[in-house]
Length: 427
Image 1 (tube, one colour):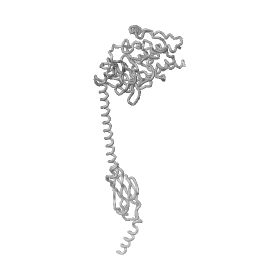
Image 2 (tube, rainbow, N blue to C red):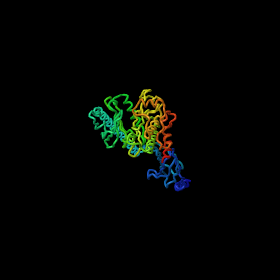
Image 3 (cartoon, rainbow, N blue to C red):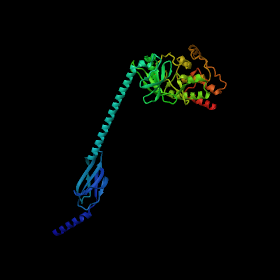
């Protein structure tokens, strides 16, 4: 019996590797499975996921392991061994294991990123500090040199703020306009209030509003405001810098000779296109006149000067309720009678510019009592005395300058479209 038992045992030991079943391996987390002959060889991959099957190697005992990716710092890791060939299934429980190389790289990247952010903030704060110092310095220079802005000998200043004065462009009732050059050589127009206004608190508020409103408008037919100084003390002087438009204003063209009808209508279309954009922002200009429209050398009409512009939605006004503002000759009747102000108010002034360009105003522009008498009474303007004009032109102009705002075009876009239809017939 003993001999028979020994023989069976020897036979089993010889046949066991050949009779071994595939090893079913399960992990509680997905990963990549590896095996090796216990403590002897390199790890060899044999599957991925939560389950894998290992064909029995030609060995009685093996180790198995699973490794899964968790994040840049940690892996899932589990290992069993040694496993005998008679085992047909094994379970692997994983634990977290620090991935040294990836953890080092991740931490190094994080430290580098934080360092870059810190350096960027330092540079930004340093730049802001320099800009503040520069701005303060320029303001201090302006405060010290206000007296040099207005010469008693009839000359003009060489420098205003950071801008070099090139030449005098014009003087209006409230401000002087210079052509100036920025430090980079760019040419602009700079508007400087007269000394009797520049220190007045109410005027400063109006002037500041003009800068803010003008800077908010960006359109090819509106001169852009590009830079400005808002005074922070009584010693500082306000001014603003706007786009320089080579050319002449509409009034200069009228002084030389009556411009061609087609040019007048083309300029008017440009003004109306600019007003469409201005009105869309809730702004009523209230002082449209030939002096405030510049015709560039290419024939482009540019609307400028928002000194008394009114925001339609503004809750407070810088003028008294019964105070009329504007240029009387081109003011709409409702401006003189404290009536409601809206887009038709600006359209009246545009229509009157066209009327003055194609005919002659029925009043003297310098006769204030005569202007007030004519407009406040509600008398309509006499029809254009041009027999060579098509009736479509006269009808359009007369609708623009109707004393009743309700009978004018309601919006600049409506007036422009009607004008374009007239221009098509003249082409």
